[in-house]
Length: 283
Ligand code: SAM
Image (tube, rainbow, N blue to C red; front, top):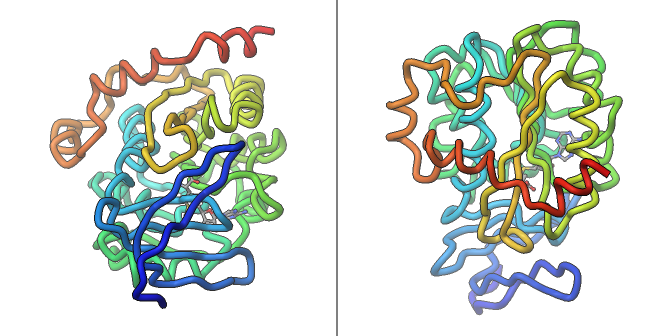
């Protein structure tokens, strides 16, 4: 692309978050504009349709928080569905668990996977070669609708912000379908946007999951390149969520393999719901 370093910005509500570096790729896929930039500080970073998705420097802030609270809270975790996740980070974290036997990764845009395998090799790492991982280029919403009941122990929704082709992944009917295809003790985990930069959709997700599932809980932490930095992940199940006492002998090994997540971090992060969000949820 260009050898001349330049600023690439995500604009959001009279603010912008820019990364300075060389643009290695800029192209349009069937669904979205894809940009890869390489910067001294963040390394290579992926932007989709003007929104930062991930960077090699801060991706673990996001991927470790989506995966480990979910997989450590369920006993049986052999069959997993990842919706979105085309950069490979979520699959990488799931494949750390020896009990995981099969992962269906359903990504709508094959270009995102191709670009991630080429420019963000370190992110997916060995996940792309792991026989337990099956890639399906399909719409996650349609995949869930055609899947039979009680199919998955965990559903991890690693999708981009609401857009023409991802809106359905934030709807009550989608969550209802997810509940149907989860096993009785299964867990749903979703990136639930920012309480600051995407407050309305954040509140909508929390209210929908509270309505659809017997129990749901939200944790808060930070993803440095995301608008306002503060982000959230919500976990829901028909069982009482067991988010403090892990169900995995491997938890100590997993903790050691992580840069951000550990059990104390998780316990604190589930106690961080801002008051204004609590007020809106109770209004
Ligand atoms: N961490 C990022 C975030 O929170 O915004 C998400 C990263 S991941 C790359 C998001 C992926 O979701 C994108 O590759 C996008 O193509 C995919 N996606 C969006 N809508 C989808 C759908 N309906 N079905 C499957 N994948 C979808």
